[in-house]
Amino acid sequence: MGLFAFILGYVSTILDEFMGYCKLIQNREVGWPTVDRKTGELKREQQPIWKKIKLILLFNPIAEWIDRTKLMRLYLHDNSLKEGKKERSPRSKSKIRPFIDFYHINMKEFTPSDIKEYATFEDFFVREHARGSRPIYEEGDDSFAIVPSDCRVVVYPSVHLAQKLWIKGQHFSIANLLGDPSIAESFADGPVASFRLSPQDYHRYHAPVTGTVKWYKQFSGEYYNVDPWNLRSHIDVLTSNARCAVCFETEKYGDVIFVAIGASDVGTVKFNEDTRIPGRRIRKGQEIGRFEFGGSSILVVFQKGRILFDEDLLNLSNERIMVDVEVGMSLGRLQAKGGEKRGSVDEESGKVNEKRQKVNEMHEKAGETETYAQAVSEGGKKSDSEKEDTQTTKKAAKALRIT
Image 1 (cartoon, rainbow, N blue to C red):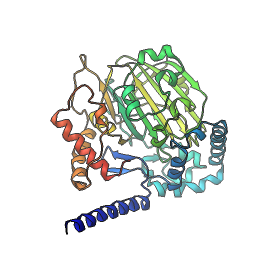
Image 2: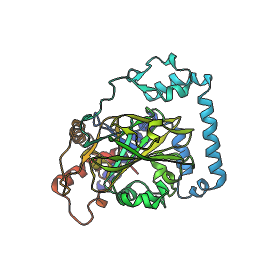
Image 3: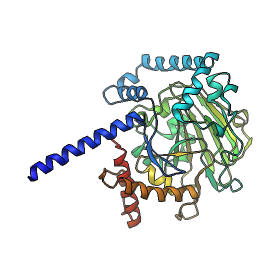
Image 4: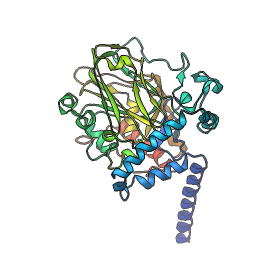
């Protein structure tokens, strides 16, 4: 009787897992796990299934050598140019409505809100926010840094930790990212925030801090996709792709590096003219550039000991869960002298912490999964509150079937 009950329970678990995956596929929720910062909802990002399959086939240990070949790199580059040309044609306008419906885009947040006013899909792709739709957190206080784009974000207090948990490229480093070891020295193992934009997102980006343009650089390169699946492969996506970098000299944070990275299907990375001229003053929240068609990525790198990222972002990033954020939300604040820690600095952080407990209760039967927060606690033990927080995320992560 005991053996029969065990077998029945095992079969039931397998069926539950299978039905769970079927539901995710039906809803097209096959992207990376994310938490909506405003609501605390834990979900998988919507993504066309064909795109997910293509990423799995191309970016895996067996097929990675194909991605490094000259033929594949030429294909990605030519394909990017062709896609960009198609999206600039008047015929592309017919794609706007299906695109909005697939991704559930709220056009009231943008201007113009009427899709008839967009001449091409690219015009729609680089649409602007409606006034007031994205308030800037602590706009008058330069000790707070903000999120530069509508996107999904992970943050890490050091480049070393980012490499352990997120960016797996064999040769990723700040020196390779900027193409200049002498510049990279002042950012050695500094805090890094990685922002990934998906096709449905607002594709303009804004200054995360107030400062003066110190220098601007442009790098030619490849057009690899910047999906988390790819970033966790051995391909050096972020340091190989075409990108532009600007350094802001700030009163509060010292030098801050902002790197906009192109990706597959992205024709260009464009910084506004003011952002390319040394000596120009840029205020926090000011639009500084845009991506044209496709997915894309941003890296913001701070000097060591300058910024303390918000707790909710750190906690979820340590579990390899991206946070769905919007332009103007809090990213972190100036680190106090002596490195004192602080609590959450904004309402969004509190909402996420409350919602995560509810998510845990919803998925209490989901079991446990291996946590990656161990990398953070090297050399020391976690407090009871940290252990409880980690357990919450572990159960929620299992419910989303992180592999």
